[in-house]
Image 1 (tube, helix red, strand yellow):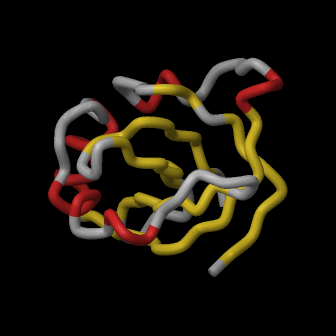
Image 2 (tube, rainbow, N blue to C red; image 1 turned 180 degrees about the horizontal axis):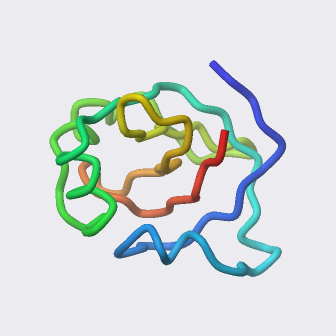
Length: 103
């Protein structure tokens, strides 16, 4: 697992552009990556252009994340890229909170 200081999380973002903009300070959270999921280019593009859709790869990892003092998140990235999206799922299968991750 990897620990970082914090990231700015957005509630129920629709597209990745929602994550790459100024954020409220209170949306900053300390987090820990509990699993990295690497997607192919088409699957990643589909994910970042509609993050509110139910995703099987999020549901398959439902037991790995938690909201506490340090959020335990999934990192979703495209194979071969270092950036991605930190995900705190909601209802087990879609993005409740997310933050842009620049490695």
